[in-house]
Image 1 (cartoon, rainbow, N blue to C red):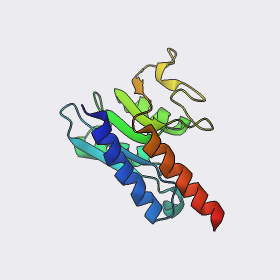
Image 2: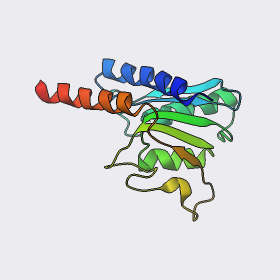
Image 3: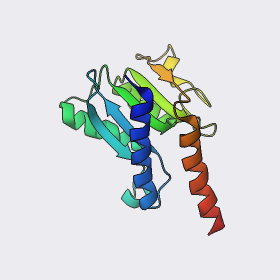
Length: 151
């Protein structure tokens, strides 16, 4: 799988969040064949739903597309490290691998603040790859908040 290709796709999803004045986080889920089965971008403000994170939106779409709440073998690409809520959903969905761009030292659940991916007390562990398109994923967030502060 070409991690950079799918991360750039996730960045396109993040740009959709900017258009609705949401924090620009985007997610893409692929199956074993590399077929995109889930897409998402942040929408908690516009949906009035604290769970409407990009990862959750993508997981919901992928589960619907596959007809299964278990996404065994799937890979999730997300522009920012998943938060603790999203990591819980990722583990419940049995996603095999998460690839993210920029770390999230305040909310990260995949290594920065917590590391749920390798917690042996949980019934599912997964592979984490970080830093893919790091500069691009970091810049989209920084730019968003810079613009917010200047208004």
